[in-house]
Length: 403
Image (cartoon, rainbow, N blue to C red; front, side, top):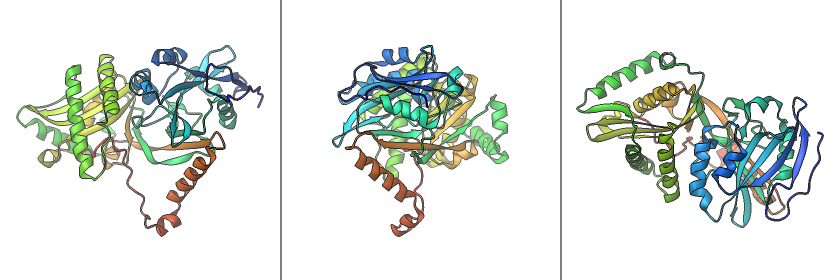
């Protein structure tokens, strides 16, 4: 590695005074730097021209910062990787906050982001520094903290390899992502499903549409979108409560985040809300968000009982997929959680990884304990001795099983 380092920050981060230079995979020179930024406009200006997954898209970051970024407990930073002519080729937005006496650097999450990944300039993606070289550059410029914690890192960013995914100390998350990719049109996608699934979908759709006032539609009005979101909260809260789990998506800050996504995203055709109604009765809702040619559906909820016999959650998800394809999507991500209906709708599993690294002596015990617990949770002998031989069901908690 050809590098020149600068002094590691010892106090609060200010401007990008620290940097590290290195040579990338194709001989291109790169330098890393860290910036504090004060709001979405600053971040979007620094990352202009970069591509991202849905959970790091301009819409997502703007809404996230407008809600969670206002907290006095959250400091916002971005690590930038520039090429030899000064263009930003990779960006890693981070927050710093305190927890149990330790300062953590982590992705912008707060329980709402399924996946975490950097933003990348496509034309530079193949030339970026690899593996340890890239991580060393990032580590040298990180703002002062005790622990770096990056959870649910995705292996790809807008179809590009995520160069941060393969850190040697990364651990598989207990959850996985599920997605269908390479979609060209609805008919072609639907033809890839099993004959049984296609037959069931057709029968359930016809059966539902025979009900008085039945309609399966895309919501176009923002006020109707907010009303659908409120009903979705009710569906999911009831379903999660039936499982004996705590429901958190109605927490004031998370609810405000989803309202902001709804209003801004519907105005920009980036949010897709599909719903099923029987007259005035709302039966099912799917909430999805788009970035580039990728869509991730974040939440789905529906009534059960007699309505559940028609698989309304699956029908409303199919409509969301169809609408996403109409808007140019070629990848439909079903989010985290291992549900049978995702396989039936053609989704394939892909791994997510967590990375916890100590950045100070104070952070070392936390990181060591985290790695020990992660190892124990996956060790068959330990699980058998503790009576947990069967792996717990993966459930992201944001969906509610689609009937």
